[in-house]
Amino acid sequence: MNKNLIFPLMIVIGSSCYGILSTMIKVAMQHGFETSEAVTSQYVVGFLLALILFVATQRTLPRITGKGFLIIMISGLLTGTTGIVYGKAVHYLPASLAVVMLFQFTWIGLFLDCIIHRRRPSRIELFSLVFLVIGTILAAGILDVDLSGLDWRGWAFGFAAAFSFACFMQFNSRPVEGISTIGRMTIMSLFAMIIVLLFQAPEVLVNGKLFGSELFIFGLLLGFFGIILPILLFTIAVPKVGGGLASILSAMELPVAILASVIVIHEKLSILQVGGILLVLAGMMIPTLLQKKARLQTK
Image (cartoon, rainbow, N blue to C red; front, side):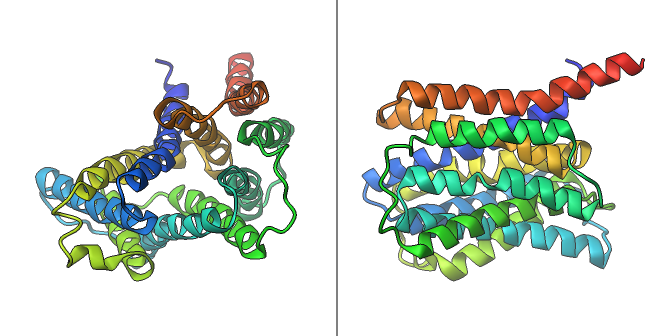
């Protein structure tokens, strides 16, 4: 495979992992578990899996600067914060609208990247955002949803989730010397678990529910696809492609979330939603393909 496509593909796969989490949580709810319990199991078991990987593969402790540790810690806290506030948005908003609010991270992430690096967004990036925004609205199926009377807290939490995830992409795009990918993932998952335990369902650790029921199985699945695999892929790939393009490529989460809900829990999929998914995919592919074309022309 062309090495220039490997890192964008990693981000697409990582964001696809996030896309199946909402369906997994819905299945957990069908088995009688609360959303907060499922989210807590994800971060606790995810940290345990990361710790096992660290002990099995690392022979020395990381040697990082205070600044490097701060970057990793904040990345982990933002990971947990995103899960918490997005859950609140789902509580106050229709699920389809909560997804649309979350996906505001695409343009937020792009403009954060522009502010941090003191640059203007390229025409390619702006053109791609047009596809993503229109595609997101169509794919989420909210055109026939009555928006009157919705709680303002839902809008606030939804925007907070988008901003939190966009900030995570920016912090995670910063390289840190003296630590392996697995070491970085372990520290991130630790701080993500800490903040989730503070605000979700810490009681599952002591009431026997996490390790004595099916919740542990859901924790394994959610922990692997929500912590281990995406954080590994993002940690490797985001510094290579930059926070702006990573935010655009992460839009893959939306079509995967919709398709997973259709396949697993048999939600309906309209023609407009199919068109929206295609627009999202086009918006993701445009920057990568045009950058590849530009590189070929300069050779």
